Length: 125
Image 1 (cartoon, one colour):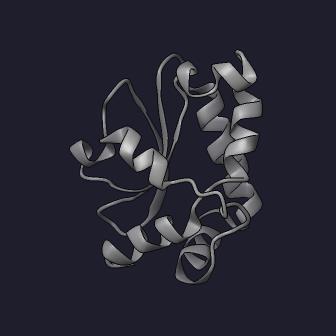
Image 2: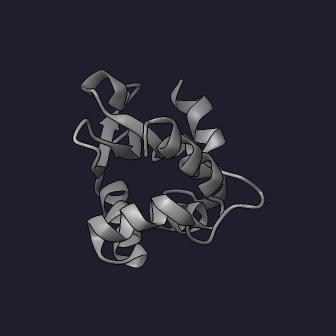
């Protein structure tokens, strides 16, 4: 499930910033989109070992950044995934060797904000 969600979280036409209600929610939570990106990247970069970094919607309708190990998914904790970044080494080793930071930088150029916004709307945005 995680890999399927991950592939949908990226697009060849991706990157940039979200629009509309999701951007407003991100700015309400973190102040600016750049602060959100920095916090997400920090969480993804600091995650030890294999896993995932997620933007999720909580049951209280707030956004949060969480990481999970191995094949764990946020839905098992009552969280609604909006987008995910794979931080397993296999996701980036061929292109970046063990440089997770370079992988994360490239991820931001491919984020599928339309998919994340769709997930936001489907969870009652």
